[in-house]
View (cartoon, rainbow, N blue to C red):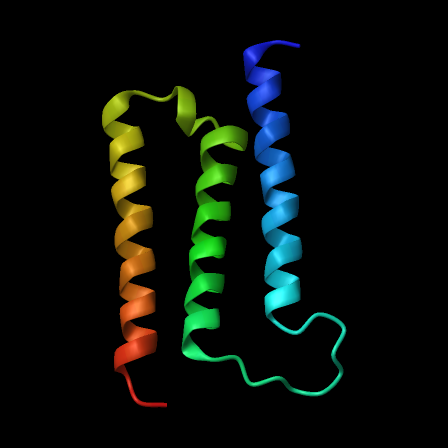
Length: 93
């Protein structure tokens, strides 16, 4: 198995694992509304942005793009994640 195929398989397995962990943390099969605390919701935000990063790098080809494009993408992911988590913690409900 080539390195590229190995990386894609590992990324795919990570996506599945993160999806299952997100499902579990958000209440899973519970039919009643489960109040998630702020920490849990922040972890779910981090999982979501890490999944976005994996998809864009491994399945959309940014991993093989020029360095400046890759760096711009990495900064964009970090800034957007930080802004959303900060808004979630700082703005009143």
